[in-house]
Length: 313
Ligand code: UD2
Image (cartoon, rainbow, N blue to C red; front, side):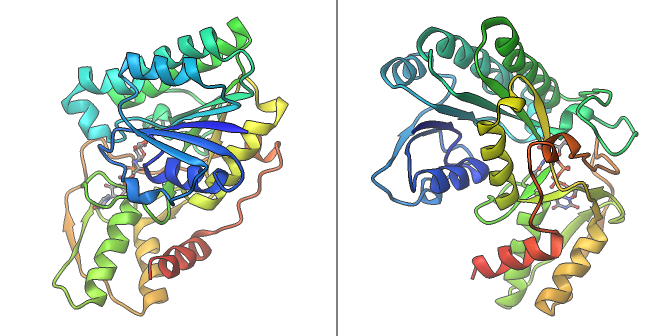
């Protein structure tokens, strides 16, 4: 099979690319703004193209000259804060590229088995009803969330209107190896792991906790995310639909830090700061729709963190 993975040098994209390239041909396109080429395991089945999904000539060339069975569109400016700072620029990446991709697929990829678009739990905003079901109220509050929701709706409409095989996923808080901890808006677990490593090597460091640590999130381990993506890509019942990808369970940051403290036998130094603007207090998914396809998360937070921490050694 032939795969195109946009944003395929990033955390989720590279994990999927490394997994599927064991037995399939994969083209990865990534502008390396957040991703790293080193995330990709060298393999003759995998071709890396450095470029942006906003480059219409490049995208036209890739899509017109190859036949793909599966396309995963992960390329995005993943920082909500960045979208608030630069709404026009991030719109090009987070929305325009999706519409362009859909048109190219409509033109050239008649036999595509599935296009999967990565949307986000951000579409639910701070509407307080929990857990979030796919049919829960949508309340996108930032350019990032608005673009994700609009793009997701286009992706699903291309199924209903033109018969293109599409699905979308709404990621909750994904964590695991190769998540870049370098930006303050990186996933909190990647930042935490980085700080724990520094403590272990005797560096003077502390973790900045925004708020009192009582905020909760549905943290889902990358291997469960890969399981979900492959299932959705292969099942007929998922056509034209969006799926929450989480565990269905939430944990507070305080509980999370206690879990890692205990696993590593370390007391992480914490500096408390006021909560981040626009931070959501609680987030948890309802994953019944995904479970209907046969998904069952294999990692609770303890199991996922244990695997993550040992794989980093
Ligand atoms: C996640 C997504 C974001 C968007 C949003 C929608 C990630 C990385 N981000 O943001 O793209 O989809 O959900 O709701 O998955 N925190 C600290 N210290 C730090 C970093 C974070 O205390 O150094 C806190 C942060 O204020 C928040 C919690 O940890 O309360 C989780 O932060 P996050 O950035 O990992 O994820 P989230 O849910 O805000």
